[in-house]
Image (cartoon, rainbow, N blue to C red; front, side, top):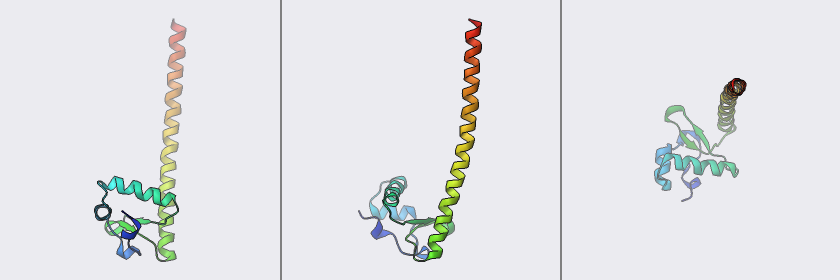
Length: 108
């Protein structure tokens, strides 16, 4: 089923992920999200909003597109911040394991 034909133009007409999944024959919202992500990677502009119930839409103005770009940038910043913290923790754990291994080898 063609997802794009079910996505309205303009944020005021956005469609919820549940409704869109049902209309497109997706078994789960997660399946819908994966299909939308493939379309986006292929160059389709499918915006989403979490405000006022959230939903998907095709931006019809520079303001809508700018807001969506800003949302994506903020998500990316948050993801990279979390990734940085996880990498630091991984490095600490790897050093601890290496130190424990050295101590165990010295004790043999």
